[in-house]
Length: 539
Image 1 (tube, helix red, strand yellow):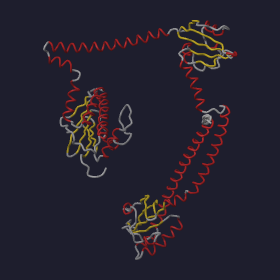
Image 2 (cartoon, helix red, strand yellow; image 1 turned 90 degrees about the vertical axis):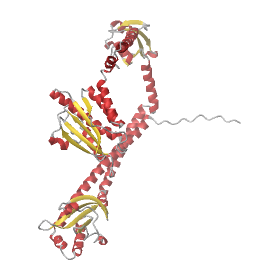
Image 3 (cartoon, one colour; image 1 turned 90 degrees about the horizontal axis):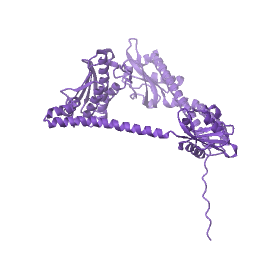
Image 4 (cartoon, helix red, strand yellow; image 1 turned 60 degrees about the horizontal axis):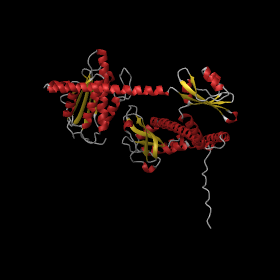
């Protein structure tokens, strides 16, 4: 006996209110969590700052103590200083007080087994008479510590004192504030969740429990109906107020926005059109004139006396089509004119060749490209590295568009394969590209002030196992007092403003590749970058 197939189960779709509730909970949780994290980080930073202040004060107090000065010069410093250090730890709340000799050998330590062993940390600054603060991992784990010298009356270093608080101790101090912060965060989350639930419940009643997909589909159908038709569509209620007006109707009638709810009589329609809209009898393909268009009107009453539907059709579309044809014809004529101009030049070249004037033909055909071709030949002959050659040719074209002559010096030469793989194409583009860009900007601004021709000169060659890239311009140059700030991020001299990143990137790239950057002056600024072709150490 066959069984009747069961109907397919319908997957339950969460309502819009439910989805909004989930989203609101997630947002509230994210905001609360973010605020809690920021508050924790701020508290942790304050706690660490307080720890640094505390250990610094304790260290200076211990170092300035006459008893400590006397003990470090005595016969058995550990016997005197170990009980003293333990007493200081007990009364000040620090994790350790370590007194050591100038070689870093401990006299005191919380673990007596560490006495006599070398101190783990940096003591160079303290030996120079300065107080040094750092976070370092020692025998007690990571700690915030201070190392300060013990000085005699002549300001000579007798010994060193290190006072520190372990990171674990700082974390324990944050435990109570963290618990309070977590409680506040949970309370805020609960309050936000309750508010989101109440808002969602109200929204669920207004949307009749419909899901977001269902509401979206209804809206998409509505919008598709309005915008898919090229005819104007206007819906009026029984009081002749506008309920809906699509874009085509606004364009045909010359109306603005915010029409919903306004009486149709207040829209400023032509009298004949308004009379046809308000007439009891439906209109069928009636032609009416607006201020700029000719429209065809149709009206139809909605069943049940709910209102009326108006449809409008543009009768001037043929004119628009004619305008489009005219536009296409204009493009065609423009292309024909360009083709004609090219043909004239070609005919001239052919005629010169037929007349046996080959040199004049070549000169005529290449007159506009002569300068660019010379530079291309020079770059290709001198620079075998394809990335640098392509970059120089591209920058030369950009400079020419700005009226700047970019030249490559005669002593420039880089053979293909000379540059090591570690010197990447990206770094080459960063260095030379930014140098040329800055030089072109400076040359243009300098020429605007002096009225001469702007020039940029590039030198690229291998010299003393280094890649040398030098770019000189005819700008105003760099003030000697500003040389120290040239490669600082944000530094710029451009009159038109700028971000001040180019030279900073050049210096950064040069340092990363073990190179140097120098600033000089000739007619304008001269910047020279030297990048080693062989690395002697790590980056």
